[in-house]
Image (cartoon, rainbow, N blue to C red; front, side, top):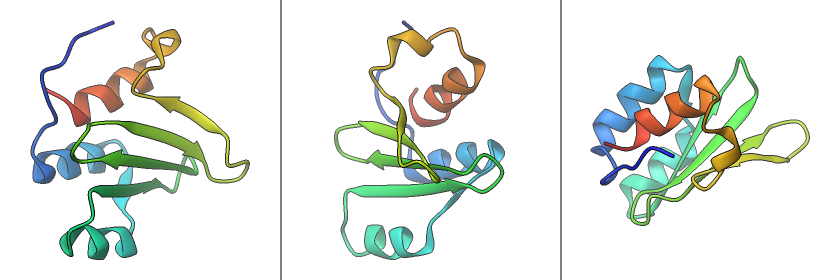
Amino acid sequence: MEMFKSLVSIDKCEENLNKLGYTWVDSSKIAFDRGSDYMCFFNETELKFLYINSVSGCFKIVDFVSDEVLATQESCDLDEEKWYADILDAIYN
């Protein structure tokens, strides 16, 4: 598993995730701007939610249809998956 130091800046995180097809959920953006620690992004093509805690760096990816958790920051079994590596690179430096 690749080791990361910390989260990228919020603006950089948003920019990186936009490149992967994730957009900030409007209500989540409003809550975040008002002091929430959580960010929620949605990938309309893949029907996935990505929840990120901006303080702890924890995240989870959830299937929109089934509500199944597909991955977290601890999903070592997905280290070889490109889509998972792309998410890690988008969130951490």
